[in-house]
Length: 138
Figure 1 (cartoon, rainbow, N blue to C red):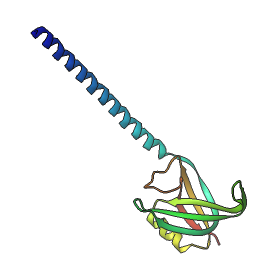
Figure 2: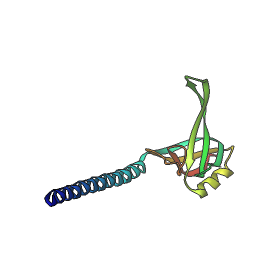
Figure 3: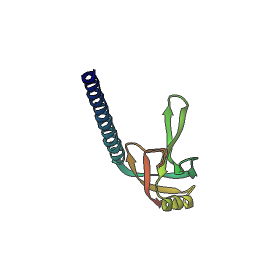
Figure 4: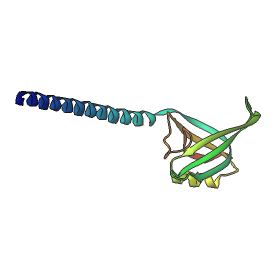
């Protein structure tokens, strides 16, 4: 009987050890995968400038406060659901000083330099376009 109990105890130890190993491997993979996802989403996909009339800029959000704006690029575009609509570009702003500058240019012609990210996290903004500088067009 004691040999049987000893074999069962050794078997339990092996099973517990195997489960711990699997959990640690899965945890390590989740951490590496999550860190890689955050790193890749921070890459700049494209960058450029857009000019138009600044329609609105706002500080919005319940849990995560973000700066969001709209720029009227001029002209119209065809929409499959709404017919013809204005050519509006939605963007986010990451820095407060740029947000404050944009507030002064609301309703005016501006040129915005932006960076497009692969993915924006909820605490960064609603869009993947982030304005990095602004200048008034005269």
